[in-house]
Length: 143
Image 1 (cartoon, rainbow, N blue to C red):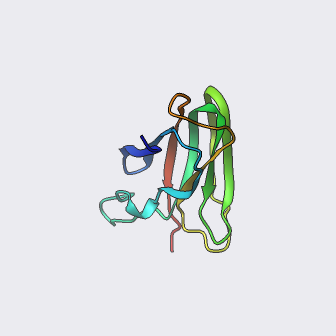
Image 2: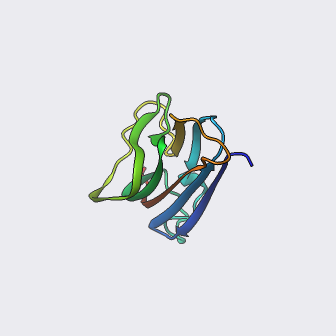
Image 3: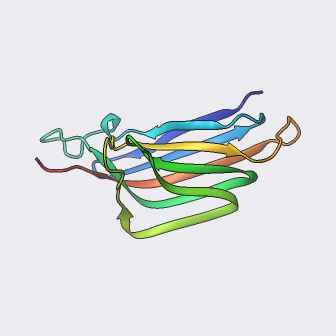
């Protein structure tokens, strides 16, 4: 079996988005920064004007990560900006009173990316896994 990562959009409403990232790793290969969610591919913020989100705010993050691996989230930009690194947690949940804002600066795309680093040797008998659920809010700038 090879490393398997799945991304599932659980909710895509006019304001709120929920996405789940799940991975099972059985090889030593790390996963480079990869798109997790792109606001341009989501449904419109309002059906009347058909406005699309240009970025996403993070309301909550729930995760579980096996020992020996680290999952890192990034705001995508010319120089990606780290949001959070998650490691060695059976279950952890972060909720924010105000959504985390994309502060990536130059070349920001609005996308959220993930990467996985592996610190231990993984074999077929030592499978590692992670799951991350993001509660997001769609945002757009009014031109």
